[in-house]
Amino acid sequence: MARLKITQVKSKIGSKQNHRETLRSLGLRRINDVVVKEDRPEIRGMAKTVRHLVSVEEVD
Image (cartoon, rainbow, N blue to C red; front, side, top):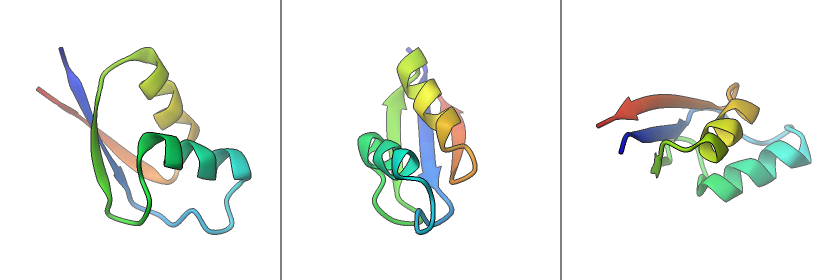
């Protein structure tokens, strides 16, 4: 199954509460944190919510 590499590239300071909670749910705590998650619709939706704070790459 494909996987997504999600990297936090911007700070969550000043962002909406929902966006901060989404970053925490993804497992991202600080800038340059990286997590690898399964490519599922739920994960893609969370990444889309905070797309201005993260970068997403597909990893095989």
